Image (cartoon, rainbow, N blue to C red; front, top):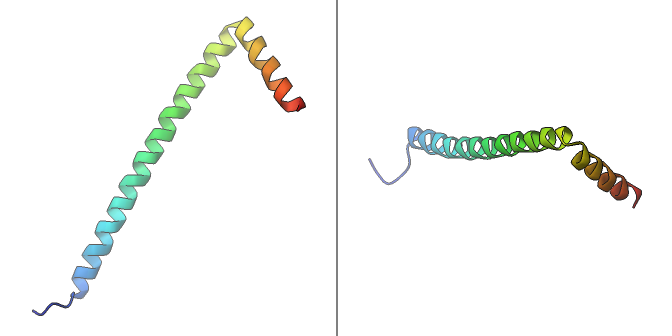
Length: 66
């Protein structure tokens, strides 16, 4: 065999690249999912604490008014 890549080598290289891309997407998805869960927990905590909820709502209203 000479130094030229064979068709199977191209397929293997492409598969390897796609596998790496998928692994990166999976890691990014898991990070976003984890952050989303944390944000939901914070939202629940805020909603359970009436004073804190009132303060957050007040801040939101000020930001929307700008």
